[in-house]
Length: 207
Image (cartoon, rainbow, N blue to C red; front, side):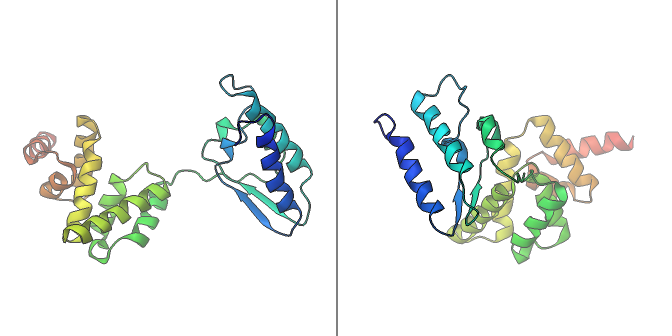
């Protein structure tokens, strides 16, 4: 990026011209940073000119190379960008089965029991694959740094997640865990919901 008029576009064109001149695969990550919608009122004219440069360069991309771009914010991209690519691949958020598989692959052996795998999957529901991986790595790091077992470290991490939920959501989560076969004590340890609350509701359900 340059403060001089037109210089940013020249810089980007130089990079793309180099890639077009050799046989290569060029990946542009965070594409939304340079291909934003030109009708965005808050963007300066320089960035709008940059999008025009990008479109021209993509139009002339040679068959000897492959251009890939990635973004987490497709709504920010200029509509004209989409027409320049032959294939668009979307990576949706993981469903419960997908999350379960990646957690199983990354979990420490001490948590490989299906009962813990199911519990952790439920508590990390809604996170992306990279966020799930980051959380499990964080638990492993904490276990090493504090000299505790992976199970205890994971329990602390999950409890932190549970605390961000509303009171009713935490209660429903504890309820789901008990219904899935977890003890009331386990449900309390992993969600922070008191055993008295869990026990009282269980008694009401039986009545």
